[in-house]
Length: 301
Image (cartoon, rainbow, N blue to C red; front, side):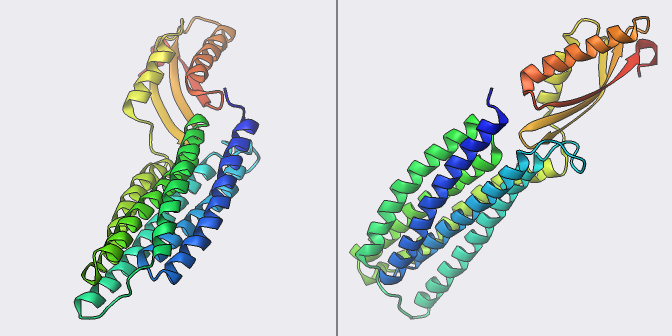
């Protein structure tokens, strides 16, 4: 199983790699958008800039979440990573809104008889380079995020993928505006708006689970049923009730009442609880935090 120290190193490595790529891409795409007269490419560059911000958020918050328990955080710092996921999602939502506003302004200008400049080939080249770079970065980041079970890293990977989608849209819009003539220059801001909708959908999907976790929502019903079944599989456990569960970053917290034979010794009851804890930690990880209240059978509800 991945150690906490190795997990943090892998997260830092992949996030720093993303940060370096995003610095280069942000500067390059914004410059290409300005000199290539492409609103879509400028919006694409701003999106990469938001990727850079999300990289910084992940670096800071994952470092904090890796700390153990202390006096002020007796359950550990796991939810800092969840908070990082939510912040990345909110950044995406803001970026999507800004891209939509920018695209709509250009579209309205054209519809009211105005003109917008035709994009240049430098913007087209920048879009192609961005697609390749961000897709490679997405695949690397999503692999590490799943391997270390980090929602924040997975969210950041999707931020990279949304940037690749943004660049694909930019490529289509810019190419259409260049090769189809002045009548199709509107494709550039139109694609910008379509990209913003796709980004918004991804952001909302990522934000939902993070909000639930921060609000201490219970684990899914099938997981809770599995927890009860695992506990009941231990010899000496007669019943499990009053189960309460929630996530804490990459770990989970389990609280339950466990019914045992009222005639056994305290030592035997303790051994049963230890066996249940071992079974649950083998299934859900060593970081699983478990609190079990013992009840004699005649007091069970």
